[in-house]
Amino acid sequence: MESGYTAHARWIKRSVKSLKGMERRLAAIVCADVAGYSRMMGADEAGTHATFKAHRSAIHPIILNHGGRVVKNTGDGFLLEFPSVVGATEAAIAMQALMAERNHHLPQNRAMHFRLGIHMGDVMADEDELFGDDVNIAVRLESVAAPGGMAVSDKAYTEASRYLSVPLVDAGNYRFKNIKDPVHVWTWMPSGTEPRGEDRSRAPDLPAPYRTAIVGVLPFANLNDTTDEYFADGLTEDLIHALSLHSFYRVLSRSSTFPFKGKALSARLIAREIDATYLIQGSVRRSGSKIRVTAELIAPENGEQLWTGRYDRDMGDLFALQDEITTSLSAAIAPEIYRAEASAPARSSDLTAWDRFLRGLSHYYRETKTDFETSIELFKEAIALDPTLSIAHAYLATIMVQGVHYGWLKSTRDLWSTAVNLAESSVRLDPRSSFAYSILAYLHAMQGRHDAAHEAIERAIELNPYDMGARGVQGICKLIAGEHREAIELLSMAVQRGNSDPRYQWAGSNAFAHYLMGQYDASLSWAREALYLNPNHLQVLAIRAAALAQSGRTEEARRACATLLSNYPDLTVERHLRNFHWKKPADVTHYRDGLLKAGVPFNKAFAESFPRGAKDS
Image (tube, rainbow, N blue to C red):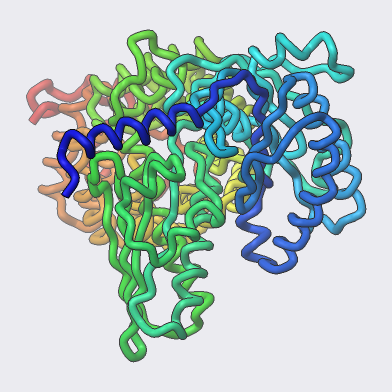
């Protein structure tokens, strides 16, 4: 039996031996992955893998010729080490030039575009593996690079720039997860590497400088026999694709999460292995002609369950069923990630534009007048610090318009002009954002530009068919255009599948749609639901009074009108209808008649002719 002292001595000897095997050295690190790899694998798994291996073999001599070595091959990329940052950068340029040439001879759907991140620094080497913060920075830089290009840290650029034959573009400071200080980044993309015949704004893998949340979708567990395995795997892959169409966060590819399929590992361990901020996991169970899908969104570091959902469906067309469940899951999960990020603590006391935006978002979710005012100021500060922050422009436009509808902001020509400019800026800065196009469509519709609204909302849906917010805005565009039945169908879909996002107030829109159809009881039901969230919502108080009057409930209409005017004593029908640019004059007349029947004064002179007590009763 070995004594405690002897065992301890043996442990120390082993530790010293291990430390001797650990070497520190200065190195240049190149991290690479393939943009859109998970989608390509979903379309043709065997062909994609074979193509990737062929490309990797072709660029291997370039790596060797510049003194580099392959540290690690991953499912959709690789990690390289070079003794010289000049050699690393020259190798990266040569690799991308070769890939551009090879892609030129391939069909568009099979072209592969590598993203490369380059950094230099002190690394720890152990048994041919590399470790350390400088390795992590290279990995983060890869996510910033455009497909076909590279992103280089300022440290690496300073050392290599005077030897390079190509110009790099200053991309500014980026803040990365688990990296304490901002990293100044330079980018490069060779001419002619853009995907042929394709609008690059549609590619969901384009980088965003402030994308801090990383989402991993674990393979859904199949709780039946292996014959249903394809459905669980297909659902997982579809959900990865659907969530990746949002630009607020980054979604890990299939190759990152599928290696954990069937392994009994803790969520925290998996998250640390793949560097995920949030994990989504679920299961599929079938019984006869019924199928049940359960899913949950968790914050793996503390194990908190942020959202859970269950979907029971009848078996039928499996592809249609898979698409329906994917849409429902994406619509439910995406806003919960927004909410979780908004409630996260600030990353430092010296707030960046992104931190200010997230603080503004946290106030926005509280949905009070004071919080709205605070969020507006924070969104403005974020834009002032970084005018390129597209999502801040979109949210500021949204909250300004909502403030008008709630009666918290005065509707002026300048306000609407500012909101439109913000929405247009958001689209220009992030042309793949369905949210940006949706708010632009909404603003066009509200101002009577029906053709422009239709064009913008069609683009939003094209960019993200799973975005229920875009479907609901399409319903509002239909409502304003006088297509009320289609509006109700779209708004109902948005309510059923995406009802937790405060950007969209579907209950109020539904109240208007049913009113214009003459369905006053349904209109009142939706108005009642909207007033639960905001009892002082100007437009909902108004439509409630009009619906009560049109349904012959005179006394209730009188009381509803009194409540409306007590909250908004300067309101008149004439002033109120200035904000309504419905396409059909009959719709405006219908609404005006309801307001007048309820007792809302037509204009200011008419209102002042009433005794004060009667108006406030």
